[in-house]
Amino acid sequence: MDNEASHGMTKRAKLSDKETMVEDGSIEHVPEEENEPRASNSEQVEMEIALILEKINNFTQMVSELLESGKSMLKELTNEFEERMILIHKEQMEKWQDEIKELRLLDAANEEIDALLHNAKYMLQNIHAG
Image (cartoon, rainbow, N blue to C red; front, side, top):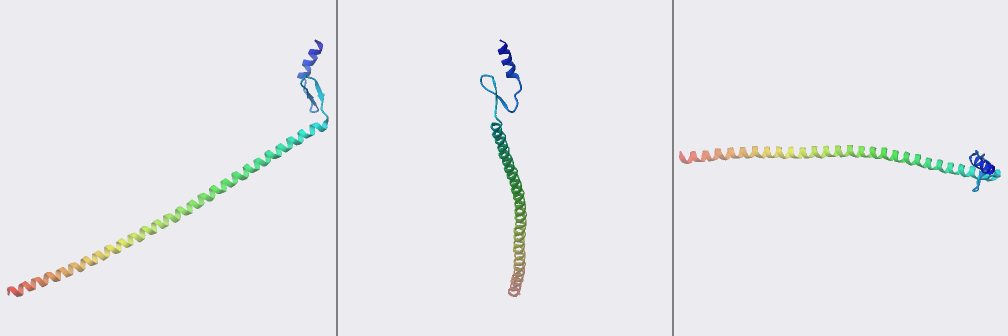
């Protein structure tokens, strides 16, 4: 029973870095060279994590740059589109203004010809009547 009590205490005892507990609850001393691979494995894991974090940062930076570039390109396209639409509108308005001007000139010419014809008709009626 004394053995069981001390055995129970062994399970609760803090293990040093050079000791490990085996299945039956006893403590074994682990040679130092066996501890080192764990440290290097841990270091390797930390290096791999650092590489992944660097990839995350690089990718995030790239996405940020692409977003800024995309925004800039869209802004330029928007400005070009707006300028082109304004130019198209201006050209169409000028075309229609020219059509209106031509129609007014044609209408004025028609009115002038109509007045001449009316006068000629009046003169012809007066000559026959007189």
